[in-house]
Image (cartoon, rainbow, N blue to C red):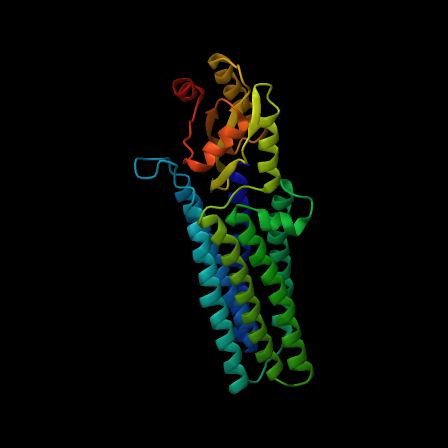
Length: 328
């Protein structure tokens, strides 16, 4: 999946959040609503988060060098984690603080017309961003179950935007009821309680992002279905006797490292083994272009003996048919 799709999701979300933040601050100043102020802070944090994700996307696309031979793709995961921390500490913390302040020292609410107008405008913008992120998640390869697809997504610029927009839409609903009940019952405590709930929502979204990003940052495998299919592709080759479970790791949302150990059938000449390695690499890359780095270790002899030997020795890897030829 090209990175340009991720950029589109982030740009749409950033434009929406920036426009929403301005209108929310205006409405909060006019109405004195604590919930509206919390929502305005939320939109500012979301805008800053999109900038950080753009920065992470830019940094992650730098080419490999001597100190980073596999590239800088994981930097996007680092900035995704920073986004989650900011959302939790600044967004959730300030919303909770503002809500508690309103509960302790209630402020009289003014005309709610502007609050309703801004909430309606914000809902339209947030829905636009949310639909964009959702469509991108549905467009990408993954399981049919939507929430499992979200969980297995490897692109923080998409799933972070999705969760932020989901939290924002939930916050807008809470803010609406806070403003409505506060004016309907002439009770500012509803407005303060709404702000507290918004803070809890932001904290929950942030913790979800931390959980999702953590696995990618420390080296998460690609989707189980992809791993199983790679195993099937290698095992289906006529020269292969057995295949150990492939080891994969995401270097970025669009780059996967694959380590594969295969055992050839007895009596297969070296030239045919080299050709088999080339066939397997070509088949994997054609079906999964994101698997950009393939390291194949080729073993000969009795599969059971090779399997026992592989358990007792560290797995060496080869990155091309030429290296396989030298090893054989």
